[in-house]
Amino acid sequence: MTNKPPPRPWATDLYNLLKANDVSQFAYVPDAGHREIIDLSIEDPSVHSIALTTEEEGVALLAGADLGGKRGVLLMQSSGVGNCVNFLSIPKGGRFPFLTIVSMRGDFGEGNPWQYPMGQAVEPVLQAMDVMTMRVDAPEDVVPTTTAAINAVFKTESSVAVLLTQKLLGAKAF
Image (cartoon, rainbow, N blue to C red; front, side, top):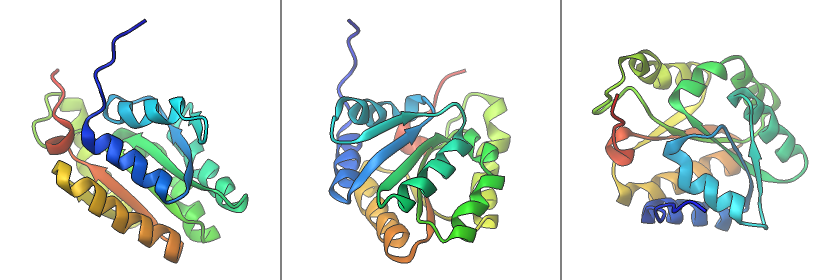
């Protein structure tokens, strides 16, 4: 049995906020930045936690969730945004709500030079695909920013990406 550190308080608050807004499908590619939310979803029998082989599967999964009357979220790292570009046309074309929470790499304090190109391209790529972006730099901004994203996504069938920056998550050493 492994000893996991307890979830950061903002991560638990974020998970509870998603559940309180009827998000019941958590699609993810394993990622340290989303570890707590992924673990909470796996341990929660009232939601479906779906491991993906690639991020674009999550875009299609969320479209299917909406067709089935369910709400979902795609948890991915910033490098996964590059994998999703073509699939990001699905929510706009099909008028599906699309919520993603992106753990950023290639920004504040990044130690891995390979993460910078995609990390710097995330916002322009998402915006080019008509996905609104909302950045979170501090723990106290997680809930209000995600609340704003949830409102935009599910009330207007919009696409929104909440970007959890490295100021919030902490930079990884290389």
